[in-house]
Image (cartoon, rainbow, N blue to C red; front, top):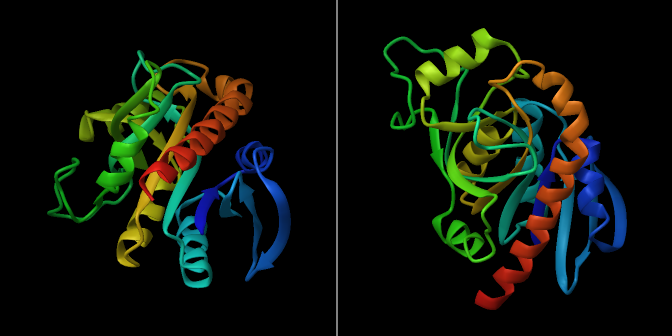
Length: 227
C-alpha cells in the first residue's frame, strides 16, 4: 500500500482523476480514498491545511494502513524568481520557518527543526525529472506567504529555501518519528517574492495540482521497477 496525502480539494481531486476503483471512507475525522494507480494499491488522504492537521492525518494513515512509503503532493509558493508556476519541486530537506526558540539558530543545518526526506525515493524521482523539476529545500509554517516582510524574514533566515507551504515539514517530522519513508512532490502555484502572488495562487492552483498529481503517478510507476 502506498499512501498519498494532499491538503486541499483541488490537489486531492487532481490525484483522484488518476485513480481507479475509488472507494471513499471516513477515518477518525478525515476523508480517505482507497483505490489503484494502475496495479498499485493506494490510499489518498485529505489532510486539511496546516501543520496540526498534517501531523494527525499522517499518524492515522501510518497506523491504519502501514504504507510502504508516503507521498505528500500539492502546491507551494516559490521563493525564487527563476522557479515559476507549474514547476515541480522535490525537497531534499525541509524545516519550520515559524518555530522560534531562544538559542536555536535558524537555517537548514539545525537538526531540531529540520528533516531530511528519503534518499532512495528522491533518487528514483530523478529518473523521471525534466528541466522543470527542481531539487532543493522547503520551509513550512502556519501562514500563507504573500507579504514582502514575510518573504524577507524567511529568506534572511533560510536563504537556501526554494519554496514555502503549510504541511510538508509536519508530515516529514511525523513520518520520521514513525519510521516511514516519505517523498514530497510540490508544484509551484505562485512566486511569493513577487507582488500579487495571492492572485497568482488562485489562477495557477489547478495547474500546480495537476502537475503534482501527474508527477506522483509517474513516480509510483517508476518505483515499480525497483520493487
